[in-house]
Length: 188
Length: 188
Image (tube, rainbow over all chains, first blue to last red; front, side, top):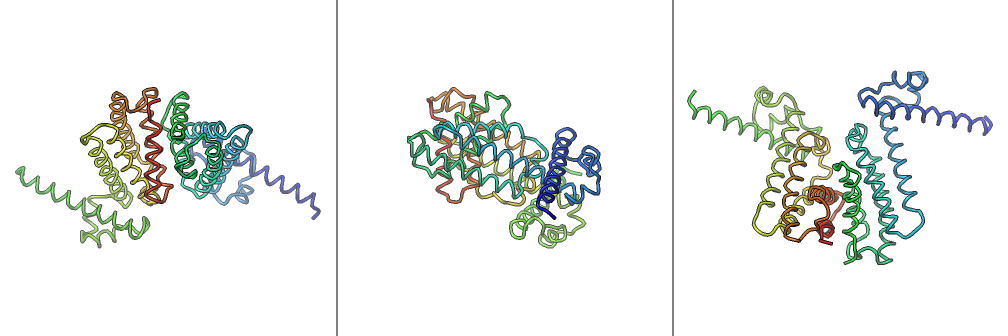
């Protein structure tokens, strides 16, 4: 088949997949995890059940793909913030604020709870730790962050600390959490 | 029945229950979660399967009771440390060090992962947050901890931050994590 034709098929497949995952995410949010069935997704998307099964062997695979996409999008947005302009410390603050916000918004999300220990989460967390470590290393070199603790350990500390946002209610409390976390990094 | 007789029966029931949970915990540690069956526990404890079913309706109930007991024991030990002699700040440090140690040792524990979102965990965490808040309040009054952030929020921060120990390998790294966490609490 000519390349153009293959491209069209690929684009079509991506569209079907994306619409399916959009419908899944939407259904989880509105009705909860237990409400997601192949039939309901077929109804929501207008895609036949038989076709859906060509993309996802079962509901679990669909939910996992949905969560993986969500985690991937978050990761991309954190990376965009991290690699922005400006000095490393404010960029670190912005990434932590975004991460804290996500932790707060998604706490109790059924999908997150059910799938949180998946391999993709471990991978995403390692990825995030690695690029936070590199911002921290920059900030240490600039004398803005303490140099007595390895950068990776400070990155682990930052991520764990701001994940506490899941237990906080107000936006102000989440902002204070980020400030308190950053206060620990001050050079001695 | 006379009270003494009831007491003897109660003590016996407690013993059966405790031995069962000991055997369960041991089996999970040695062979993993999937290896736990009623028959194996019966074999390990010498308690008949029929009797076991009078105590626990199924393996899941047994695993849950096992984890609840473990969480309860940890909580009691943290409370003992927290209510010890001495000024609040060193007591806070000791509780956080013990909590970090537990987080590091139990990371990847299958039982913990399977049951971590249970209601008893939420309850234990709230309990822990509450008594850390009260030590923090004491330390704030003594001028040892910053007064610009509510004590409960600082407690949430401390617990989340030191839970990062799960991602650390060495004992020294865990100690540094606790120190970094405490550094965030310094009065401004």
